[in-house]
Image (cartoon, rainbow, N blue to C red):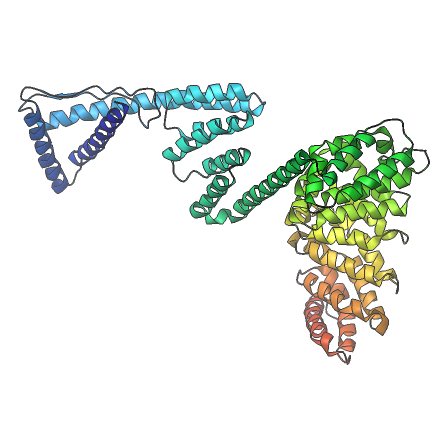
Amino acid sequence: MELYANEKLETFLRNVDHTSELVMELNSTDTATHEKAVERADRLVASMQEEKSCKSVINRTVINNSHSSVSGTVTATCEPGENPEIFMKALEHDAEERKQRRQIKEKKASALKDKGNKAFAVGDFESAVRAYTEGLEQLRDMQVLYTNRAQAFIRLNKFKEAISDCEWALKCNDKCIKAYVLMGKAHLALRNFTESRQCYEKIMNIAPEREGMVKDYLTRVELEQRKTLQEEIAQQELKEGKEEATRVPDLLRNLAKSNELNLYYCGGVELLTQAIRDSTGQAIFRLNNGFSIITGNDSIRRCLAQTSKEASSDELCVSVLRLWRTICNGNEENQQLLLDCLSTREQIVQLLTSRSSAVQQECLALLCVYSHTQHGRRVVMEKLNLYRMVENLMECIHNEDAPGIPALAVLENLAGEKKFRTQFRETFTEVFAPPFEHLLEHFSVSSQDLLLDFISVVGAMSLDEVISKNMASRKEFWRSSSAAMVRCASCEYRSILYPLLGLMINTASNPAPAIQEYAVESCSRCVVLLSDPDGGIITCRTTSCLNLRQHCLSYYSRHPVY
């Protein structure tokens, strides 16, 4: 019966569309169009007269409460022999009434949508669902109400309901990107990985320019599927009672004991680190509440906060950092969980300035694990205090006893991310530039590898246009670079010359008075280097020389010498 009603409704709607077109043609000022419309109207009336001998009636149509695209009523009558223009005016009047009724419903539905949005914004998702539902009772084809309600359903972990709403939104608009995004999230939560991928891939067909967003979502699907598989294997091994699998929970129970000596915890953490050999061990650690057990231990917490006065506190701190590195290496879920803890992420940043070189090294090794993957870099940028972290990494570079090269390795990996570069646009000349310029002027044989890595970091950061322009305007950079060129002419520092000139060339592409001031000096030094027998570096030197020469000529054109 419902199928019959829907077919009848669709037929009626098509008739209304045809009638609306006929009304427009009857009102046309074009004579030919008007005459054709009159003929069509005559045929329409004739066909209606054949169906009913006395009176033709288009019955009032009332839709039920199921999802549909239109609600309203249409009634029009025409006596046999009546002028077709009168009949068309009656239909036109009825269509206008339908339009007015829809406008009223649209206004009510829009108000309910706003009410739902306000409830959603304050976290009252149940109220938001009720408001969106009331809005849909007013207007069944309002796409945004379906997607908004789907979003609220996801927050309430009602994923099947969210999928249903997304499907209805797509019936309203089959190119609704938001519906595909939300449906993909709901399927992912239900671990329907294939369906989730399909939702995101359909976005590429609709909007190819959203490729970056789609890749990000597909990566999340891949990570979640990998996590699920790891946990299924881990659960199976625990269920079978395998010795390697049960060892991790046993060690965690021992570490949950309180009021033990630091050496006790240090030994337990080392044994736990050795027991975690692969992704299955990492998953078992996670599934057995390992993060909470370790961070909840008072002795461990004091050591990580560097407030413990007990013996072996640094050793315990090193052991815990090594454990973090083991459970996070190649495991995106564990990386996320570790930095979800506020105290842990604060401690990791602070430990970069530890008085213990061993603690610093382990902390840097942990950050290197994060910085090697795009997911890890994203977690670091989202969770850590980046400005404070970079400041502390710079202290590692300044301190001759500190592991400066690993610190620069972390920075170089992060500098490859556009978001990281953008975040340091305003503070680059305060945080990065001064220590770099200082190293350019005071490097030695023992620190030339450090300078090479620093040049790579600054070069990566200078991919940002704002940072590159700021660097070009610094007299300190051009002065220190010019001085470094003189020292690099000797054989023992020759490895620095090529990357340094490359950085100078790229930076010089931004016109700035500071470049013009040092152009003559740098150009003369480049000319001397052109005669160098090292052919592999001549092209770079020549280009640099010509580039700086242009700035030199520009400078003298504005400041002639008499």
